Image (cartoon, rainbow, N blue to C red):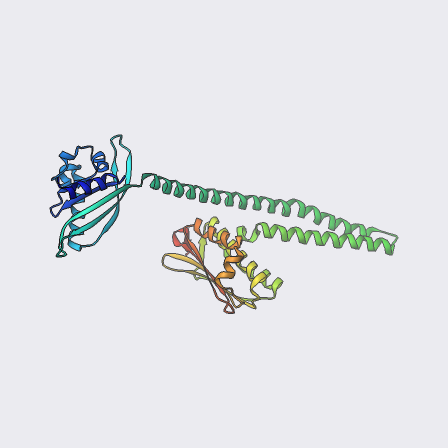
Length: 353
């Protein structure tokens, strides 16, 4: 071995990663100790042999093919690979192969280095699994929360609402039967009636905000119309609604997601946009169902949107994501805001005759 070879080998052996040199026929010229350990072979059984003679055939042939690509293209190649250890566990490696050129610029071989990244891969997989679990948990909690809203809404409407209505009726009967016709008494009864009426209205509003009965009883399209009418009455913002034909029949989860996304969008319009008009479109495409909400308000730039860090926007995105869809926001200052929601059509079915 020449002094140059000894120097190269000393350098390679100080590299903790697997390193090697090959000639143009993919035969090993020089390997370091880490490479020998990975091969589970002594250096003498590796040098002057091809990968197919050193590694299992499926790996060796792949290594020869990547050597050929590097030499033909004359460019560095980087890729990830998997290999099984003696104990049967799967290990990941980040491999880089580079062409070797002579003084005339001709490719005469390759050099390579392979670094184990198993721990990194495991961390990535654990992170992805954790994200998946968090999303599943979020979907479950959202479902539970919606069920709880439905239950509370029904109890408010069926029990408290009926009780207040009975009080209101009773006060009316007492008022009619009072023989003395005392004016002060009449004012007291009238005041109680107004309080009862106001409480009934509050209960109805709270119940509707929790879970509007129209959504479960008459469906999404009727609920959207009711929501827009109520929004327009409260905010004095005009609206236009475009619905698909024929209408779509969604699952309960899709109905809830679209309704809540629209509800949150209209809340943002009334609080932040200073808009005077809102367009709502529900469309069906060949592979998806789309909801589009456009206002003519003041809009917002990216920095404003980032500073706001709206949990409402995050919640809207999460609802779409849970159904396999997505939500995008297009907004610029003084040019209004458009929110587009896409849900895969497999989440809904078209009703027909």
